[in-house]
Length: 424
Image 1 (cartoon, helix red, strand yellow):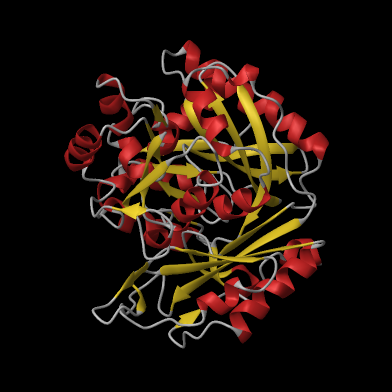
Image 2 (tube, one colour):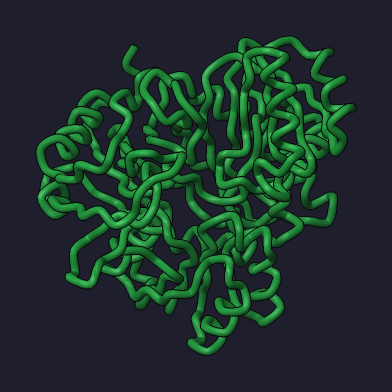
């Protein structure tokens, strides 16, 4: 099959790497891709949010199958447009992708279908939002309703700070995404990312991972798109996974079908493991980044076969997925200054030496090449150093060995405590 993969991040590099292991994939093109993907697949400089450009190129080249990686083209309706042209595509429709593109949609959906989640209110008016805040105990969870590149959530510790943040939200802190704001009860516990693949009728469970959203060690600093992840998280037992499938994932698949928006794609459930059991924080409608890099290192089944079955609504014919018994860790290397302002264009070396370490695989995110052919940083989150080991500690030590002893990038930084919950 000739396959097109949409996206340019570390998630897409990991997906490309895994897809090319399938005998079903004869040729892979990534739009637009990045410096690492270009080493293993064709890359075409059409941005993931250029819907007309993507449609034109995909139609012209006659791809057999399209896989949509990031959230923005899903929210813009790329899947709908491809389906209307008779092109096989893996990913949810625009209506189904509202599970990610609108937090208010998802909260109301959870209420209708009794899916456990935090108490909440939805507001488009600053005065009403402030009044609701006064009925909530600190700390406060404020979320932009729309897509904000993983950064649209703040957790103020005081009422005064929360009111100031609300004013900034409604003044356009996250653009149109924060024209509507969700205020939630603060839930206590450990966060877990859980993934399942749905064909609109049933769901195939994958595994859980644990992300690290804050920029700095000790879960300090601003929220980011994710500074690292690992699997398996000890807190997420087999019994908890069964509860999540029964209480959250399966009711979601059934509810979306009942509402006339059957969900075909990846259900990424951000969970809080509370004293009362698992509760849904939010849904994403695609693989997580940096969790996808962990999942692709751990998955031993043929990814392409799974996606084909999901698109054909035949997941019930797929065998349970096979996973490594090893631990996997992913440490993100970001440009200094991220998630704030940062410089682009710094040169990175040593990646081939890191890849030679047994158990290590480096996935690129924000990378490219300069006029001299040198690998350079072109974004905030730039590299994903994944490592596989017999234990979480062994995998973590190997990842940091690659970073400290093999990779040379003075302008980069990383968290030094990925997987700290597991290693306590």
